[in-house]
Each structure stands twice: as structure tokens, then as C-alpha cells.
Length: 108
Image (cartoon, rainbow, N blue to C red; front, side, top):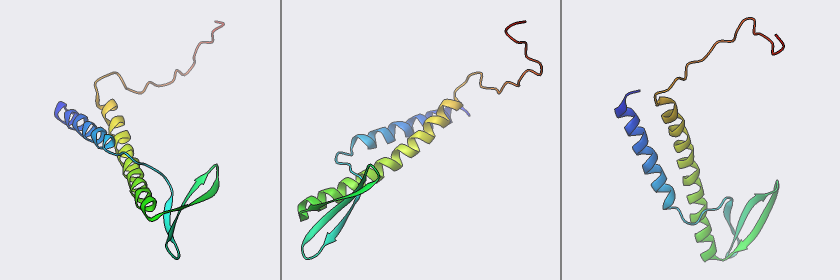
């Protein structure tokens, strides 16, 4: 991989890191309407489903927090893949070494 490609990877990593900094509220779970005029937030805690009632204002904020969580997950996945690609693109002795056929024991 050439220097120009490495610089592009580094720039993309910096862009993704900036995007992460812009996400404030984050949460997992889902928000569903609860008739007649309430909302319910549901998520998993220690393998069990837990729910909590929300007002309309809380539901709007929680929906945004859940959307932010999904964006964050996607950004982190991409950043992880780019980081690994970048690390292995840098110069260094990374050739795979073969195993010795008859390794000497420590007692020899």
C-alpha cells in the first residue's frame, strides 16, 4: 500500500473520530407507542427484557439516543476495520515465519 493510500486511511479515521464526538445522547433498546397516549422503552438487561414508560418528550429523546447508538456502532465498526487495515499497511517485518521441523528442546 502506498503513502497516498495510507494518508487517505488516516484522514478517514480522523473524520470518523470527529463524527463520534458529535453524538451526545446514546442508548440501546426500542421505543414503542403504548395506547392511548404513552410510550414504552424496552431493552435487555442481564439477559432479561426490561421496560419503562415514557412521556412523549422522553420518547422523542430516547428515539434520538437509539438512532445515535446505531450511528455510533456503524462508525466504530468502520473505524475498527480501517485501523486494522492501516496498521498492517505500515512498513514492518510482518512476514509469516514457518515452523521449524525439528525444534530443539530446552533440555538439549
